[in-house]
Amino acid sequence: MKGIKDRLELALSSRGFTNHRNNLFEDIWKEYYPSLKIFCKTYLSQSSDLDDVCQEIMLKVFNKLHTYNPLYSFTTWLYTIARNHCIDHIRGYKVTETLPFNTTSGSDDNPEDLFYLSEINQSVEKFMQRQSETDQRIAALRFSQKLRYKEISEILQIPSGTIRYRVSEIRSGLRKYLEDVYETV
Image 1 (tube, helix red, strand yellow):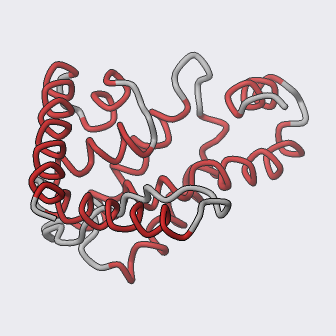
Image 2: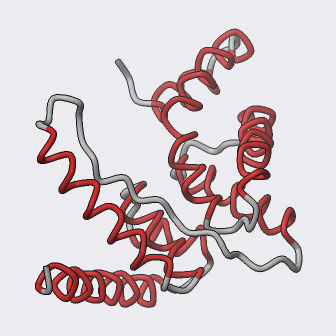
Image 3: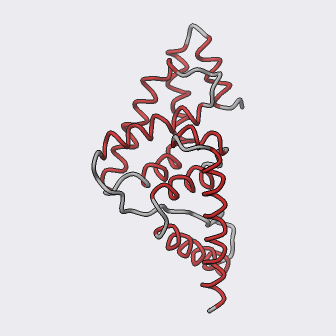
């Protein structure tokens, strides 16, 4: 199966864009909606707004698919729309919620492994709660979405050198935090 970017290029270049758009959008929703929620949660202070805002963003993406330029990264385009929409939504409100990092894996794991992964997940969440909103956003894009530094820089409008430095600081801070937590256990 072709990737979303390839399918977008094909759909945008064909006369049948409208016919392909619904199926393509369903694939986009499945692939990006879960990570979009993680990203948007770093902006929103009330979780009751989260699903509504994410759905509004996805509808905006759907309505603007014809404006996407395949020469550029689709992910960057989508997250730029998301960032701008979240900023418009929260004008003046402070972000207080935390970023969920799901480190649990498949259901084939044994219960003991799942327990330890759950413990680590809770520790990572506690660490991230203590980080700045910007660092939470950077972490969501780098670790959850696995975006490159340049893409994160474009989305958050922060120099890529700063992104590299913040990622390094987040990693070393988390490493030290986990060592301290699990050394005392």
